[in-house]
Image (cartoon, rainbow, N blue to C red; front, side, top):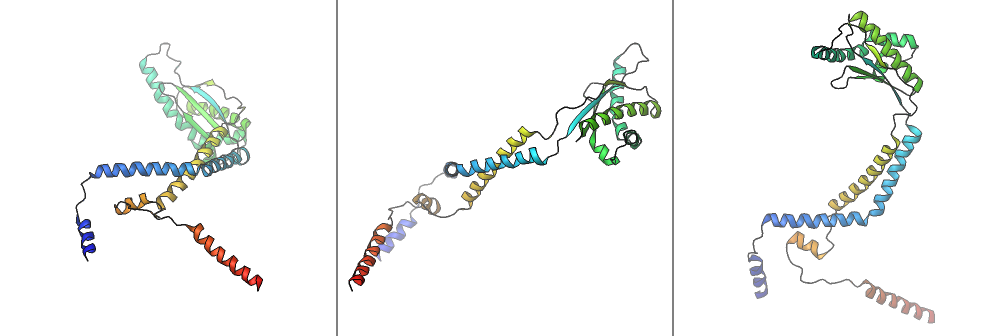
Length: 266
């Protein structure tokens, strides 16, 4: 009974106060170090997943993905009736360049392009293939066409520029823009970017492996070391008793061999 009362007194004693922030900082530091150790211990898994991700992206980039080609035609919006160009003319030219971007999404223009080139695309498909941009503070329109066929990309870009110029002059009652640069035949595909895809595959594979290690570490709540006991219970470890499996296994194996020997003699 005296021993029990002494134990109760020790439990009821107040422990020295420690700031909560210090405890949290210490736990975070220990956890991060342990997590880093776990990741380093599973470096082979990270390498295998990174190589596997690179291989998958390589197969997609070189075997599955369809190469796409881009060809660009450029138009210059200018008012050639005025011999002198002032600031207002430049501002009007910028506004017109922005308005002309809508011309290329007009179904009349797209229908004429489809008819001239005898294309098998619908309006929505052709509209997705064409992008029009106007660089800031310029009166130049970039008509870019993306297609799996490089010759088709150049033909559509050139025809779009010609048809749009005629449409602007007739329908919008504006001076016809000049062809600033004709579309050229693309020699190399614009997509897929094989080197970038390989790098993405490598990084994604490594990230997936690290994520698996982190999740397993967070979900693992087993107590394995005296330090784990101190973290969970807040009590110091007085001693550790190691389990001597080899000793017990040796005695049991010795008994078995002895009995076997007796049986052999019998």
